[in-house]
Length: 188
Image (cartoon, rainbow, N blue to C red):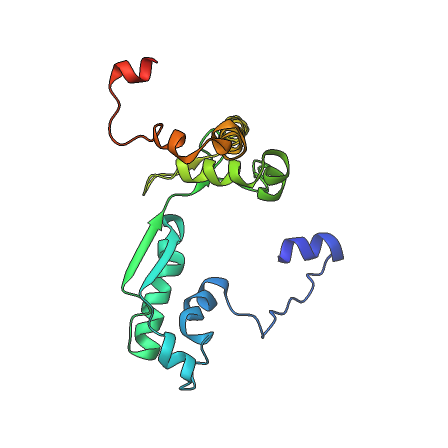
C-alpha cells in the first residue's frame, strides 16, 4: 500500500491511516453464526437459532472460516455453532484450475443460464458433484446437458400431449411397465 501511495503521490511517503471501523474479513466471518442473531445481547433469535446443526462449505475455507467460527463461537458463547460440517468440492474450470476473475476463467452463472438454460446448468453441477470431489465446469458439458434436457422436455411433452395422452385408459394400462423388462420385450 505504501509503495502504491508513493507511486501515485510521490515522495516523501504519504501518510497512510487504517480505517478504524473495518474488521478483518476472516475475523468478522468468524462472528457471523451468532452476531447476526443479536449477540452479545440475549435475544430470542440467538436462543432459538444458535447453535445450528449443519455448516455447509467448500473445503478451501475450512481453516480460514469454519475453524474461526468454531473457536470464536465456543469462546464467546460457550457453545459450538454447529455439530456437523458438510464439505463439498469446488466448481473449477474445464482444466481443473480454480476459477478466478484475475485469470479470466470464471463461468458467469447468469450468462450460462442465458446461453444453455437453468436446467442445463443445474444438471451439469449436480451430475458432476461426487462428495469431496471438485466439479470441472466446461461449455462442452453445458452444451451436452442442454441437449439432454431438451430431449427430456420433448419426450415428456410428447407423452403428455401425443397420441398416448388421448388413448383410452384401458389401452394405456396395457403399456404400463410393471417389472423388469425381458430382452425380447425391449427388442420390439
